[in-house]
Length: 127
Image 1 (cartoon, one colour):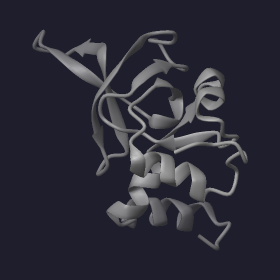
Image 2 (cartoon, rainbow, N blue to C red):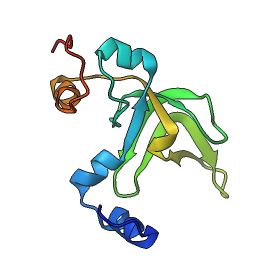
Image 3 (cartoon, rainbow, N blue to C red):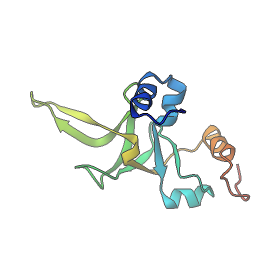
């Protein structure tokens, strides 16, 4: 993204391919998780099964597991965060990944490699 024009930035996000949308669906890592992983990297792409905390909005403070990450709409669905429709049906509420904090997650070999690749990994990281 080279432009500073808001309309071009919106267009880029709207037209972005899935491999870039995956990066856009990133959330901050908690301080405890960063210490556990021995990294200074602040965020990571959200994955299904991550334990997250809602940081903004009406459900602020709620902790739950990610049920789904919708890359086409750049939204995440968290267990226990739902809303009632006009018909009275409970549906999961879409949350922007930027409003979530990753508390715990399964950091597989691939996710750890991503942290090492970032250039912000501390020297004592062990894989």
